Picture 1 (cartoon, rainbow, N blue to C red):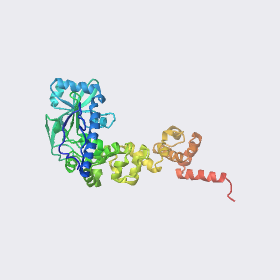
Picture 2 (cartoon, rainbow, N blue to C red):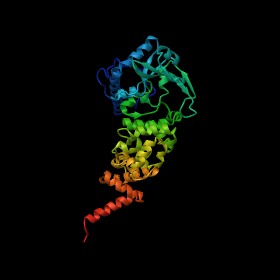
Picture 3 (cartoon, rainbow, N blue to C red):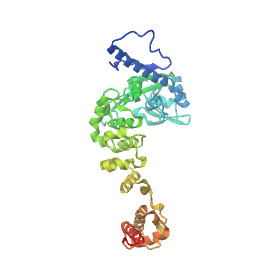
Picture 4 (cartoon, one colour):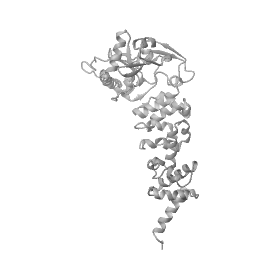
Length: 402
């Protein structure tokens, strides 16, 4: 049987490792042999992760270590938390490095006078240190999430284990001290990392009720890491996905979905949303491909520039070359059109019509040709009329069919 996950080694000092076995292997029954094999594999897997964890400090910027030392000199502990540890253990570079400490926000500000109280109400101070900015947050316990995003009450703590207990997934609930070289693994995050599993910290229903966006974060981690959802986590995600566009504010939902869209292999997460296959598509067309099959998704896309781009891609059947062409690419401009007489909105209409025609037939993009076409548009021609006339000319040039 698999080992009991509730009996975790919570604090791992990643400096020394005991051998896996000592002495001769005794004989076992088939069942005992299977259990031993499983445990051996888990031990080897965990030992592999610990060996990588031992080198964590080598992958952190010196400024992070120096900042932690400054806090230690004031008798405070400092841990690197969250995604940075996860990414380093996966062999990736750490992008955003977040720090957690037992120092209170006011104490952080006192130690680092040039800091910024960006999220002081929730215990977060932006520390300016060695020409770099770091988010430093006081260990905390959280209670109640009536708005499904922010805790109703925040209580500061002196225990890093209480702090990691509020994290979303086990692979994000790791904390590493650059000073003591200790790795806190309260919820078997190392094991889940090795087994490529996404599992909530404690009960999935409770974690997702605290912040609905965590459902989409689970899918994003699937897309980014290639990991799979643990069974109970997967069941809770599936139960909440039907209303995924309203799990949080539109801006926050878009941010998570956008990260899925632009990941290397979005399909592992996108498939659970019922989206079309995206892996093989150019990143530039993925949003349009989704909106084409799920128009309701457009409601969470608030950026006007992206909305226009999606509309153009849909208009030209996801053809990036056609959708990319703009009025500025025409060999004629508004001043040239005004010389023909039009003013105001009519100038824009003529340029838009010319663009529509040129997108379909690039050979028309010559200034002399466009001037004549502009006169036709002033006389009532549409882009379709112009293109049909060009087809008729080509057919006549070929001569009679019989």
